[in-house]
Image (cartoon, rainbow, N blue to C red):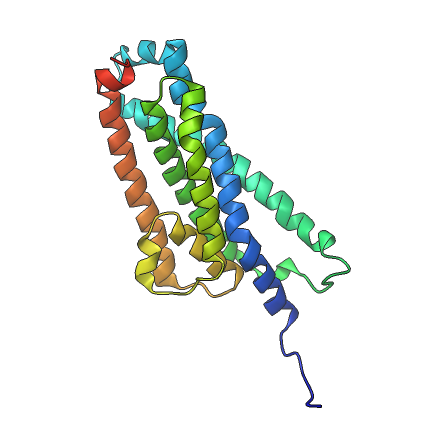
Length: 227
């Protein structure tokens, strides 16, 4: 029989495991955090009538939209990061007996910085998208019913990206999918600077576009007051 030699190092195996599970989990945690606060902050306030009071104050509606996005993003990011860190830090203990060589020291400061940047811009994008959908709803329950199918799409994208990292740089311009692929690259220790730049700029650009759309929706009496 031919001699079979395993040349994979512990870092290679660790990176492979993380690259397969991290994209879907990160997107799930981030989306769950966004979904838990964004619909209630916009559609919920519309339902209670407090949003109408806010809109008649001498504050530009664009400022209200930006303020909503920033505040909701901070809360959602903290929720997603705390959940992700809890899972990643406990994963080596959970893998005891299956793979004992798992070690997080393979990831350097640059990898954590890239991951944080991707998570931050992704949260901005998700919050802006969910806020736009919530602005169309008349109540918090209706907003949640609109946002629910988006959760399935995000999970599917996260799952597919686990098998498609490291492709054309232009794929990193596709919102959400680019974040999932970049997370795969970070966990695989195969980050391309150009792909990272494309991912961050694309997420920011799409988020800004959605914030502009949200501002226009805030200025619409028909949408905001359900006329």
